[in-house]
Image 1: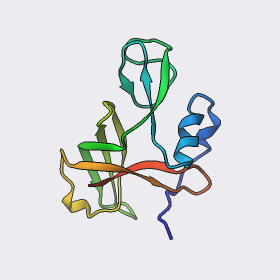
Image 2 (image 1 turned 90 degrees about the vertical axis):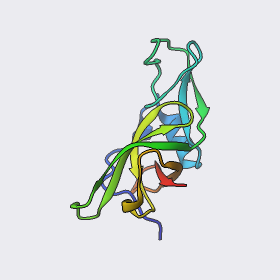
Image 3 (image 1 turned 180 degrees about the vertical axis):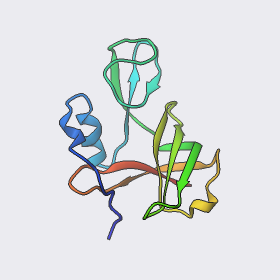
Image 4 (image 1 turned 30 degrees about the vertical axis):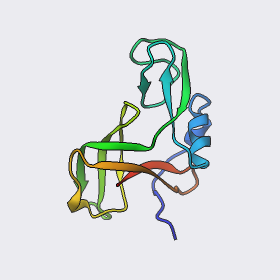
Length: 131
Protein backbone atom coordinates (compact mmCIF):
# COMPACT_ATOMS: atom_id res chain seq x y z
CA UNK A 1 0.00 0.00 0.00
CA UNK A 2 1.32 3.45 -0.93
CA UNK A 3 2.14 5.93 1.80
CA UNK A 4 -0.47 8.70 1.89
CA UNK A 5 -0.13 12.31 2.91
CA UNK A 6 -2.37 12.87 5.91
CA UNK A 7 -3.87 16.09 7.17
CA UNK A 8 -4.35 17.47 3.66
CA UNK A 9 -7.06 20.10 4.07
CA UNK A 10 -9.51 21.03 1.35
CA UNK A 11 -9.41 20.52 -2.37
CA UNK A 12 -6.65 22.65 -3.92
CA UNK A 13 -7.98 21.92 -7.39
CA UNK A 14 -11.09 24.00 -6.63
CA UNK A 15 -9.12 27.20 -7.40
CA UNK A 16 -9.51 27.80 -11.17
CA UNK A 17 -6.10 29.54 -11.42
CA UNK A 18 -4.22 26.42 -10.33
CA UNK A 19 -6.67 23.69 -11.36
CA UNK A 20 -4.48 22.77 -14.40
CA UNK A 21 -1.61 22.05 -11.99
CA UNK A 22 -3.67 19.62 -9.91
CA UNK A 23 -5.26 18.04 -13.00
CA UNK A 24 -1.76 17.37 -14.37
CA UNK A 25 -0.61 16.02 -10.98
CA UNK A 26 -3.47 13.54 -11.08
CA UNK A 27 -2.04 12.38 -14.43
CA UNK A 28 1.48 12.16 -12.96
CA UNK A 29 2.73 15.30 -14.72
CA UNK A 30 4.47 18.26 -13.05
CA UNK A 31 3.59 21.71 -14.37
CA UNK A 32 5.17 25.04 -13.50
CA UNK A 33 4.21 28.55 -14.54
CA UNK A 34 6.52 30.63 -16.71
CA UNK A 35 6.28 34.20 -17.94
CA UNK A 36 6.25 34.74 -21.70
CA UNK A 37 7.30 38.38 -21.21
CA UNK A 38 10.49 37.97 -19.14
CA UNK A 39 10.98 34.25 -19.75
CA UNK A 40 11.37 33.26 -16.08
CA UNK A 41 9.66 30.30 -14.47
CA UNK A 42 8.15 30.78 -11.02
CA UNK A 43 6.83 28.76 -8.13
CA UNK A 44 4.15 28.71 -6.71
CA UNK A 45 1.85 28.75 -9.75
CA UNK A 46 0.03 32.05 -10.17
CA UNK A 47 -1.40 34.12 -13.00
CA UNK A 48 0.89 37.16 -12.57
CA UNK A 49 4.68 36.92 -12.91
CA UNK A 50 6.35 37.85 -9.58
CA UNK A 51 9.40 39.18 -11.44
CA UNK A 52 7.95 41.58 -14.03
CA UNK A 53 4.26 41.63 -13.01
CA UNK A 54 3.12 40.55 -16.47
CA UNK A 55 -0.10 38.58 -16.76
CA UNK A 56 1.33 36.70 -19.75
CA UNK A 57 2.10 33.40 -18.07
CA UNK A 58 1.73 29.86 -19.34
CA UNK A 59 1.94 26.33 -18.01
CA UNK A 60 5.07 24.37 -18.90
CA UNK A 61 6.04 20.79 -18.24
CA UNK A 62 8.64 20.74 -15.45
CA UNK A 63 11.67 18.48 -15.58
CA UNK A 64 11.00 17.03 -12.13
CA UNK A 65 14.71 17.30 -11.32
CA UNK A 66 16.28 19.51 -8.69
CA UNK A 67 18.87 20.07 -5.97
CA UNK A 68 18.37 20.38 -2.22
CA UNK A 69 18.99 24.02 -1.28
CA UNK A 70 18.28 23.53 2.45
CA UNK A 71 16.41 21.03 4.59
CA UNK A 72 15.37 20.16 8.12
CA UNK A 73 14.48 16.76 9.53
CA UNK A 74 11.73 16.68 12.16
CA UNK A 75 12.86 13.70 14.28
CA UNK A 76 10.59 14.38 17.25
CA UNK A 77 7.39 14.28 15.20
CA UNK A 78 5.21 11.19 15.73
CA UNK A 79 6.30 10.18 12.22
CA UNK A 80 9.67 11.80 11.36
CA UNK A 81 9.73 13.80 8.12
CA UNK A 82 12.04 16.06 6.14
CA UNK A 83 11.02 19.43 4.75
CA UNK A 84 13.23 21.16 2.21
CA UNK A 85 13.71 23.91 -0.30
CA UNK A 86 14.50 22.32 -3.64
CA UNK A 87 15.86 24.39 -6.51
CA UNK A 88 14.34 22.99 -9.67
CA UNK A 89 16.37 22.58 -12.86
CA UNK A 90 13.68 24.80 -14.37
CA UNK A 91 14.74 27.73 -12.18
CA UNK A 92 12.39 28.24 -9.23
CA UNK A 93 12.93 27.03 -5.69
CA UNK A 94 10.01 25.32 -3.99
CA UNK A 95 9.25 24.16 -0.46
CA UNK A 96 8.51 20.46 -0.40
CA UNK A 97 9.09 17.20 1.46
CA UNK A 98 11.92 14.75 0.90
CA UNK A 99 10.59 11.19 1.03
CA UNK A 100 11.50 7.54 0.53
CA UNK A 101 15.03 7.76 1.91
CA UNK A 102 17.20 7.58 5.01
CA UNK A 103 17.09 11.15 6.32
CA UNK A 104 20.56 10.84 7.85
CA UNK A 105 21.99 10.71 4.32
CA UNK A 106 20.48 13.99 3.12
CA UNK A 107 22.90 16.72 2.07
CA UNK A 108 22.65 20.27 0.76
CA UNK A 109 23.42 20.17 -2.96
CA UNK A 110 22.11 16.62 -3.32
CA UNK A 111 20.25 15.83 -6.54
CA UNK A 112 16.59 14.86 -6.18
CA UNK A 113 13.78 13.81 -8.46
CA UNK A 114 10.03 14.35 -8.32
CA UNK A 115 7.63 11.76 -6.95
CA UNK A 116 3.91 12.23 -6.45
CA UNK A 117 2.45 11.06 -3.15
CA UNK A 118 -1.24 10.21 -2.84
CA UNK A 119 -3.40 12.08 -0.37
CA UNK A 120 -6.53 11.23 1.55
CA UNK A 121 -9.33 12.62 -0.59
CA UNK A 122 -7.28 14.97 -2.76
CA UNK A 123 -4.93 15.00 -5.70
CA UNK A 124 -1.38 13.65 -5.39
CA UNK A 125 1.20 16.10 -4.01
CA UNK A 126 4.64 16.67 -5.56
CA UNK A 127 7.54 15.70 -3.30
CA UNK A 128 11.13 14.71 -3.96
CA UNK A 129 13.44 11.77 -3.32
CA UNK A 130 17.23 11.54 -3.70
CA UNK A 131 18.51 10.35 -7.08
